[in-house]
Image (spheres, rainbow, N blue to C red):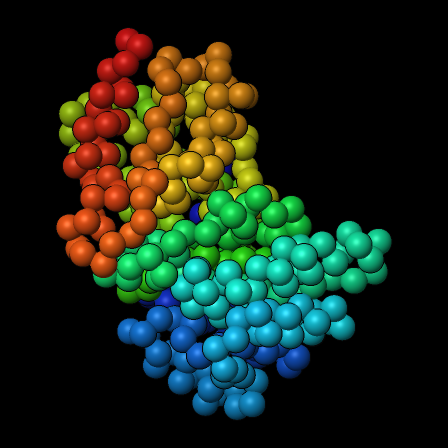
Length: 334
């Protein structure tokens, strides 16, 4: 079943502010909770980091650029009961820490027969950002999804960002919180009161009867724009946001496909072995009898990322291309 959103209470805040509130509230509740990093909210919202530093002096560490040491330290802290939030910046910067993520954080609970947990939340930004080039534009969530033992959170709205962050910071498990720098300034309604969103509960952002479109992260907004355009033509697209990749809510997606009979996925990982490929494989394997047409992947091309704006833009379908692809899909199998 899809999540039922908590009613908003009449205020709109940015994605970055929603994350800030989740971190602030956790720091107020847990005196052992510590933040490693200094650009959690991106370059345009650094005033939020200054607010945290002012309220919690001595609990925000600004380490040197040494991601392997940073994650290893946080994993060790988690093993002795502390809770840390580790900001790794751009997703590609997590690669130097891959051994600590794959060989320590994700497996320590299993290897210790349940005696130890690596309690930490790792934050990173993914995706095409506008001139970031190869080393600042990768989306590593499919690589992380291939690693058993990690929880993976990938919100698209301020409401989801706050609720999922609050849940992540209380989880005893190593959790990766992935967002996109282009989401930072987006606004949405967020309740004044505290709340959490359970992991493994997808959200149907827009109901529809003709096509199921699973979209992730900032591309949820593109999906909603495409769905609104197609609605003027009488084509109703159901937009499903998984919100977490691990745990993954198959039931909501499969239920949607059973109703619509057509399926597409819109995601910013690469074509080969990406998040889109895994979701398509799940639908094809478990809802094949419901499909009236072949599943469709609308994802990043299998290519390095250029700093050139036109070349970067060519890597990912834009909204008109998504509209055209879904229009054709909706007509297939009639």
